[in-house]
Image: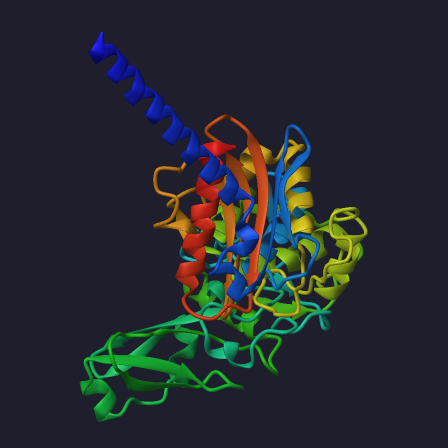
Length: 441
């Protein structure tokens, strides 16, 4: 009897302690506003139950933040609603003697990440004269509005263009005492390396700011042999690169540029890659170049012209009506600090996607736990989170979907600006909060 009473007392104490633990966790959910780390920065949070339509948590959610690459959620949605199942990378027309080829901004052309090159296969096997339709004027610049001045040298921000070729980058390799380029068009633009650079254990290739002249220098701890090329003051560079590459495969081809599409021909789209394949690469590694080109392509396919501000303005009155009410949206990638969007607006977009036929494909496109830009985070919760990260200096964010242990479907947006210290500390804090919600909501 005494053992039974002791057992009951122990069990009662256990349940009381468990109740206190649950109470502690429950209180934690509603005391985020007093978090000592988060309160060193500006932040906003919105979490909603997608099936019940209720708000679980909202703090500064109507305020506007620099969202960094969370902006790519807008670009993704515009692309999914514009391109269908595959990317209409080019428009093509033929008559008896000519092939007319119009680029639509497809970033996969001659990109070795995409081995199937349908357009190049057509061109290298044709006996017709090739006419490449290159517009004389476009309504966008090489870089996005508000990008940092020094991005012209960085591999995370190649220039935007009507006809991307080779990912708009040059890759270098060392052969004996010389450096060579892929594409080889740039071989003669490499300054002969000094003996000091050749003897160095590691080297870096740097580009001049306003031209495609490259210089090799010694580097401290690694080789850095990839650089964007520039089309500054040369809107025919992409055509020249295509010509140089194509003549190696089809030496007899005759080709030229035309500035306007012939009116008497009907152009048909050539689809180059599955939309979801391209967007999965874009979102899982947060590829800025792909995002910018997808925004330009959306304008070209949806509204008939290449533009950035014009496309965004039209999209706001079209696809994003009632979603992006007051936020400021200026580029496709989120590299710009000119973007200002609230957690409320991101959650509106995520809710629209959830209620559409695109939800399951978007879950496959977004990074899940411990994948892509979420690598190392949300381990053990791979089937409970699908979200887009965002990172700029002193700004970060995460927006996406949660599936709780109770089976509830949630959308969230967590944006943090103007923090000081380690970005990883703030990522871990977001992880801590979201895992608690997965476990308890």
